[in-house]
Image (tube, rainbow, N blue to C red; front, side, top):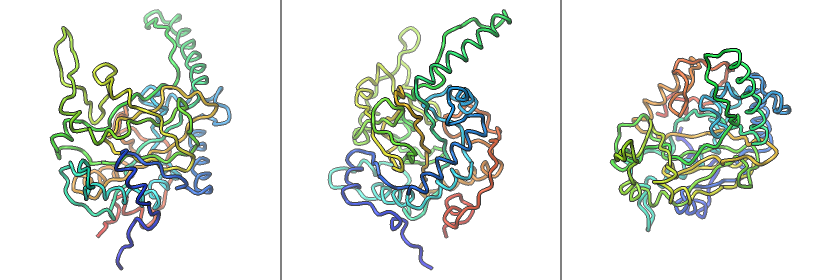
Length: 368
């Protein structure tokens, strides 16, 4: 039986595709139904409750979020990978349909822009894909974050008084903080079209579970249109200054590239809030500098799930088999900025029965 095109599950308009080509990002509204949205939010809140975080009582239980973040609360990103409600989102055919159509940009150049074709992986079938298992975001209001940070610091100070050998640094830090502008790729690798990477993820994306319409409410920010200038910027990017003023190469750790406040200040100034509603799917070219807002001045947490897909190319076939092995043993993913040992086991041991599509996305069954 011939496979139906993935795009049929959620066709995009020509205007949406052109907007993505021009701006490098796209917000697609109403991707999740009300029922799907409620199920995902209830699942997230139930998972958090298993770790002692009560969505309805963050003042008293929010401190337990600390154990779920291996990156000191950056952006409200939590190391939650495998609960069943989340795996259901990872095989959502509507999100996959949107990605599949945007992948066409990496196959055919538009009349005025060929920047999407600057990759070494060649043609690929946009009707074949793999899931990329990522994390979740639960960014609590900054006011609560500061209160909890003070309480944790006070408790630590009390321990220090009783333990004179411990550091007496009494500075209070909020429980959560911003995830400053960065890239999840190394500019040099892209510029040189290197195939020496663990995966190729040209598009990044998340599904929003709450409205995020105002700036400084913990939401997504990016520099629209930067993908069209990426190569030139990467070629002329200023070096960093080391000790004694010695010039050193701009930093890239793994595939994490910070946008520096001085040397990359022009890029920082282009970063802006991208509004989205609950149920919206937000996609961006991975050459766009992006961030989570410095503050959440709202009254409710920002909730989203990072759901991405990988094209069916050689490097991703190998990656997805390694990812599948981790999933089967519930070992946390360490491909992202996760400061945990790769053998750490996630406590959430939900069993999930994948659909036929999901089994192919996970690499359990072949697309052939």
